[in-house]
Image 1 (cartoon, each protein chain N blue to C red):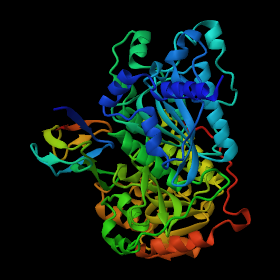
Image 2: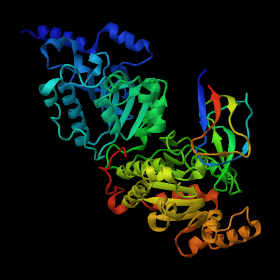
Image 3: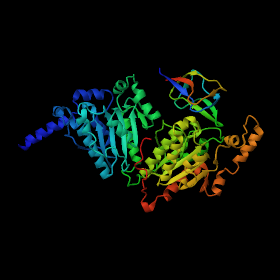
Image 4: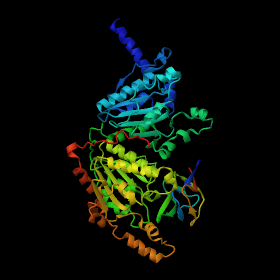
Length: 511
Length: 73
């Protein structure tokens, strides 16, 4: 055949694939204010850096060859701010981006290539689930499971998911495996669609209650951010990756320090009330400690008594885990423990030093907590902290009591333990302690109660902690940022070239 | 206009009500303050909207998860 004929045929086939599910379906999809699978890739990658892998893959069913361009999942490599990454972008206009033997093969290829070459895997998830009839019957189902590594997570590279439409089946599973998830507020994320679920359990299902962003960001905590647009979602994916190394054998990238980043620390005394009975929002303290505009909260709508965020101090990436007195006085509940554990796993897996900010009356105790396995979750959290090999710095701001003192980095559970001069450390809140130890209630005998509180509070100051060298320094709150910046400079694990042991790389993402 | 239930996330006593029915409230703005564990713990609005119902009074005991107000988006 002459080359001209090859060229014409190649161009025809290429056009067919780039047209995705055809102009009508693509137009309908875009009319809903959505980007299509290929536009999403354009938004993700540096211009001109995308190379497509598996462009001419198609359904293995002959009758579907012409109707399955790229078999409904667009894959390839590109650069994000100059760094290589792999992408799987589900194309809902092709058979609802349902999963088939061929496109699952493509996904496996992308995952293996990303792992072998140390680059993040980005997933734009939007799929109806398994393709029918391809996966029907023993023959269809038996063709699944060809990849015994498909769902292994060892956190050698970051997985990041944007849920941009209905995401069921494989799209849901890979979202669960991801380190960071952003979701459109009109998208759905569940094992099966509301329609299939309603039929299966013979019940009316409210789609948002089953699979909506509020459910996934406030109840399950799987989703980090709910957003209104694809552009916003992709922007957050890129922002998250800017804090992470490309793979676990690298330190996170250092950034320029925005001008004026030291100024906010001076306001610290205004952010934390003098009265111990007053609460405050620890997020403001975190913002004042970190470089200006550098804080990216994770799971901010879930388990709010624990605040988790990536940020930078003096340009160096840190993971911040803080109890937040604004919610339940900062008492840590079972969900907060899960949130803390998964955050420690993330930071340790990607060589991100951890800063713990502590103001907590302890773990929230009660029947409900026990029913929800609070003791197991507390000890999971504690085990995770002790397995961390990245540097850890803990600052006790006000209260730190009981086991929570240890979980939040107390004594040798952090590399350097610091205490504000306002720190108050003991086995439990002195007001409660008087009740427990002496059986005296404030309303029965206020004078005696006050005397006993003072007695219990004795020897519980920052200086008492520093006196036995459980704390390495006592600080003015306004010095927190400069202290942390200096300690990050010192604690760089130089013999290991800032790379941790990643003892939790294969811990489950979802507890 | 959708209604959102405002629930206390902690057991305690209503110490102070800081919003009146009809007031506009922002997401995470306090509606009332509960005294619990010797702390003043705010109950925050779950969304931007208008406070349409208050279901407790100062001095009332509230349980964890109890509905204390309603906000209309």
